[in-house]
Length: 88
Image 1 (cartoon, rainbow, N blue to C red):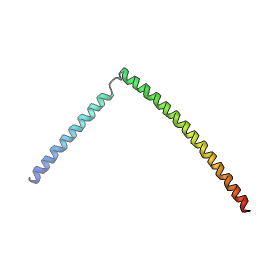
Image 2: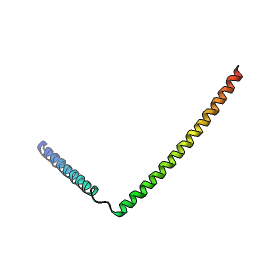
Image 3: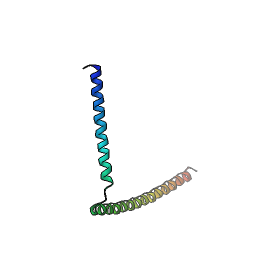
């Protein structure tokens, strides 16, 4: 192949990819603007409930972890105090 043929082929491929990408984006945009169906609304409601439950469970776990860390820090401080008294 000559250089000119290679350039023409490359330009043709680039044009084809650009067209395919534009069509893909256009299809995505028309699908996302469609009116949600009853099933979509129901699924979104279930998802919101699941997210709420997950957030609540995470908050409870974080609270328990914080309390455990606090107790561990208190025990470590007590141990350090005892060690300091023994050293005197």
